[in-house]
Image 1 (cartoon, helix red, strand yellow):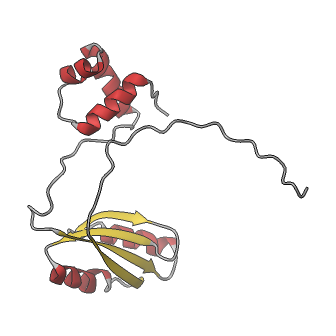
Image 2 (cartoon, rainbow, N blue to C red):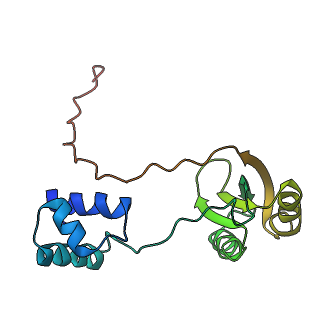
Image 3 (cartoon, rainbow, N blue to C red):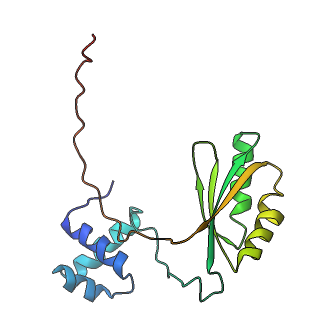
Length: 167
C-alpha cells in the first residue's frame, strides 16, 4: 500500500479535480518543491495508485443521451460462462461500464445509446442473443452522478468482539 501522507493525499485530490495541471501548478497548490511534486506523482503511478488519465466526454453531444442499466443473469453459472460473457460485453460499443455482481444477477451493464429504439435493438440483438444469458432486465437511468474526487478512507482499528451473552 502506498504512503498516504498529506502530500500524497493532496496530490491525489488535486489530480482528480484537474489532471491537466502542470507539475509547477500542482507543487504551488500544495506548497512543495517542483522536484518533490514530480517525484511523488511518479511514485503514485509506479505503485499503481494512479492508474492513468482520461477525458470525460459529454455523451449527449456524442448522440448517446439515453443511458440504461441492464441486469444480466447467466446460466449455467460457471467460471467459463461468466468470463466469456464479460469478454463479449466489453466489445460492444454501447457499453460504458460492466459490474460483475453477487445476488440474483451476475452483471450490471451500463450502456449509452441514441434513443429507446436503439436500446431495444441493442438488448434484443446483442445481449438477449448471447447463448448463456438466462434473463435480463433493462432500467433507464434518469441521472448518473459521480462522486469525485475519491478520497482516502481512514483506517479504523478493528473492534474486539466480546463473547456473546449466551456463552
